[in-house]
Image (cartoon, rainbow, N blue to C red; front, side, top):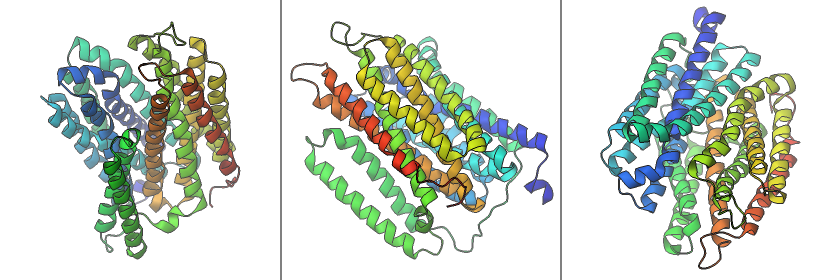
Amino acid sequence: MTTTLAPPVRSGKAAVWALGLLAVSTGALESVVAPTLPLLQRELDMSRAEGGLLSIVLAITGALITPVAGKFGDRYGGKRVMIRLMAVVSAGGLVSALAPNLPVLLLGQVLQGAMVGALPLSFILVREHLPEGDSKVAIGVVSGLFVGGGMAGMLSAGPVAEQLSRHWMFALPTIAVIGSTLLVNRLMPHDTPRRSDDAGVDWPGLGLLSGTLVTLMLVLALAPDAGSQPLAFGALIVLLAAFVTGWTAVERRAASPMIDLRMLARPAIWKSCVLTFVICLGTSMAVYLVPQLFDVPAHEYGFGASATEIGFYLLPGTVAASLAGPISGIGARRFGSRAVAIAGISIMAAALIALAAVHTEVWHLVIGKMMIALANGLCVTAMVTRTATSVDQSDTGIATSLVLVTRVLGMAVGSQVGAALLAAGTPSGSDVPAESAFVTGFVIAGVVTALSLLVARTMSKGVKE
């Protein structure tokens, strides 16, 4: 028992790096669709609507699986659940690699979406096997490597798909996922399950939570076109309200609820979720608006950049995001998560307002996007670290999964708001939005981000709230 709970330091470090390798592999697999979506649309004869569905189906599955994985990890052990989850992800990657048509590719993406659940499971394991100070750094490292893997996937997917085939752009990261999963299985000590099975699984709560998240993602996806489909949008809103009401009622009465509402009401949890949502909303608006601004023709007010040039311009921001995780973990250990969050929010608000005022040169956008990516990584990692260390160890998985789901929702909302602003700011008969639409988007994101400082400043310096 002693060996299981306190493994040798060398084994613990090797196991954490195995988790980091798994994070790189899953991050790469997650990101290959976005840069190759036009290619996939051509090869699989997809409409724009079908392309939009392909681009969000992984996020929908991730939002659904993450809290389930976190809860099951708390109950049955993080390593045990992770290995099974990665088996599903590997199967999804192979299905995507072999997919002959869109329906099969969608099935593969649904299975791949389970990968997002690996993050709270990783946090369970590092908190189990490392001292508190080291676990904060390890959480930052794993988070940063996941972003770094996403960068590698985005940069390599296009060349691999063009030089080899679209099949290999899924197959190569899937092989890496399988190999790193075997390493984790071998090197990571088993953690002790901290929940008994006496109360059983809250299947009604799980079903209603699943319905809530799926419906919410569909509402966000349909929001920009709500005016043209008011009945469908209204029906989804009513269905979402019904799911939320039913889920709340069930969780209040459940003997072992999927998500303990009392835990969700704790200041350390809801403040982390609010800040994560706001910071990711600001980030995703910039993620959407900056490439669109690069794409605006040079004879207007943009730069007429090609897809390859845009990817090159965005690279410094991706590098900054991958470094932000470890920096945030170290900062949280030395100065506290609140200080890191306040610094990140301040950087992001300043960068967004600066982009609204000055965006006439390529380097303005490159530096602005880089600072926003750095700020996002600092804040989200700080909030995950704070959440992980503010709850009992038996609740690490479910608590951190709430923050990660909030991250997905914030990114989805920000993208949709950015798209709606550009659509509303495009004059009739033109394909180019007015420059004021970009300015408005950056200002809104900057002001909302700055207002979140009011919440950040109320966070306690200590761990427990």
